[in-house]
Length: 504
Image (cartoon, rainbow, N blue to C red):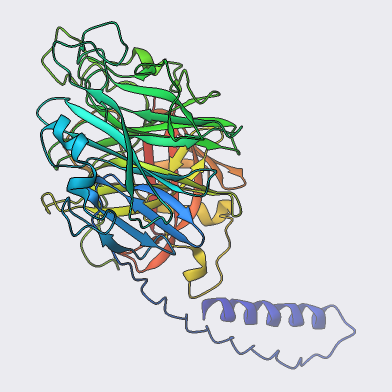
């Protein structure tokens, strides 16, 4: 009403001045006060729903309109939208539909590992149209493992064993290199396979967990087996029992890089699992971080206690670790956060040009319960993947039409910011309040400057941490029951920060 009154007074003054200047009526007719346009009642945003599943170490494959994830313990699930999942297999037992009887079908592998367990699986469709299920079993208290492949005509199986092709943990015996005795500090644990094609269509497999680190093998696409004469293949990262595992390689046409994702730390709720990434122009490396560190040199110090994390923590681009946002005014429910998120796979949609990170995570104060999560991934101005702060939901789910672009004016305002740091720690990083101001300054718990770079690119330069190159987007915040403006950014030191709008 203050605006209307001011306008009416201005009109009255203008008319009086005209009369005094001559040529007009000495008794002007008062200007009508315009009737304010009613403010439309906003359409409530319906709450989005998600159907969650627990598949540890999910490896993704899209077939037709469906996404399928395969993980440890014979677990598998499917989805058409990356939001609602249906589990259709679980457990290493005769009832698991992936095999007619998994315990007998994979008996050779179980005999080697001395246990009836399955670790992280991977499935790919090769040129013959068949589906190749890469399985692995590990004793657990040692890297005595066997890896093999089973084949099926349909993605849901049943899979028939083809061959065990790689073993580890042969104490006192010659290793797969055919020359040296097996050494767990140097040679890999034969688990956690990821079979992928490079941009030229050649087939590779990256694998390994703890022990001697992460390795890569050239694969024969006609057989689905490693090409002969490679032994364990080429070493890419880790060693000396570094807590590094779950490698997954994805080529980005947008950046023309191969990105190797992996998880550092331990997988349980107290293990400080966190996801990191390195990149290379070649599928078989070398993979480096933003500091140029060759990840093949990143390994634990043999002089330090077993599972030394201090030596590996400074390296790789850390994407996500333990965190929890703080609830702000108008938000409800349990504050969103993750504990030990990790062992991811990734997917690039050639049609929509979107990338996604698929992983499992635990949650604050929920023990070892875990679920699959999917987050969208963007490439920042420096060519590094940065991960959206919230689980994926398409903007088409919004009650109103939302633009993909986030303008500089829309980016201004108050945020809750998470700094994921670089350490490998079970501590939960709590969000802090900051503000991106109209004058380009950053204030609150962090100070500095910010610049909107166009095309949703943003750079934050903070007094502590330096420059962070990132991307703005709109993401579904369950606590706010709405799509909100967010940013995700990363520094050359490999630290990621997330921000979610919390008000004006």
